Image (cartoon, rainbow, N blue to C red; front, top):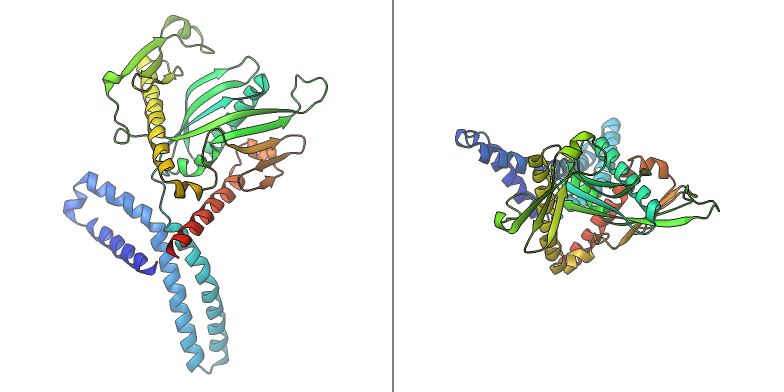
Amino acid sequence: MFDRLESISRHYEEIQRFMTEPDIVNDTEKYLRMMRESSDLEPLISTYKKYKDAVQSEKDSLEILASEKDPDLVEMAKEELQQAKADQPELVKELQILLLPKDENDDKNIIIEIRGGAGGDEAALFAYELYRMYINYAERRGYRTELVSANETGIGGMKEAVFIVTGKGAYSRLKYEAGVHRVQRVPVTESGGRIHTSTATVAVMPEAEDVDVEINPADVRMEVFRSSGAGGQHINKTSSAVRLIHVPTGMVAECQEERSQVQNREKAMRLLRARLYEIEYNKKQNEAAEAKRSQVGTGDRSEKIRTYNFPQGRVTDHRIGLTLYSIEKILNGDLDELLDPIISADQAAKLEELNKEVM
């Protein structure tokens, strides 16, 4: 591991040197690429420096203890030695996590699809609450959101919603939300006070760039139609909504949230590209069976990942057996107390798998 860290450190120093050279500075594309790589490596380099400082501190403290007679200096050296020894295992663990193979999609924007499942109107109401939860979470993290399409019910629910979340690291945080979410509560329409169980399905797709998925324009058929739902007279006068059909796969993507046909087509194309990319990405993941087994949850849309129980005020994530009694906070977008343990568990599983391979 340390040979690899030294090699990465040398590479990082080379990048810093190259970024001061006129030829690189004047080449915007190369300079930006190096800046991104430098930024990606900084957490690892910073942690490795802390580790080396701790190792050096231990050596210095031992030398002082072996030669120094002054009681104050001896006491100080003992404290520094104790701290250096305590820091090193934690820093090694942090370095191991930072060295784990990075998901190629972690820094990408995402497209989230939420669909009401079993439970009719109650499932649609729950789907809307999940939508609101992710919008609030995105706002907390400084991400930007754009609605692509929504199929609303007359009582404040959503049969389905598709929206884009833009921000660095959006996929790395929210990819763990993919799967079936279950809600248990007494619906407002239930006169007998019985608890009902409803579900909603969440899909989280990394937004694909042109270089990730090449779509032949001849393979895409476009249909236009009038928008439905709220929006005033504009909806009745123009056919601005767009539906794109990828003929080879039958994949469909549509958008009706924007006022212009051009804008709706652009968003629909982003959605279509993401769906096609997801198919290829999942194919690669399935081929890497060992890597997939080491992750917390598969990201499969049919996997039941979480239960929201209103009578008990609890949220349970079934993948790691975590239960929190803060349902209101979570549904208001305070998701980090759920996501942080899930991410830690995923990293621990991957580390264990990596250590098995090394042994």
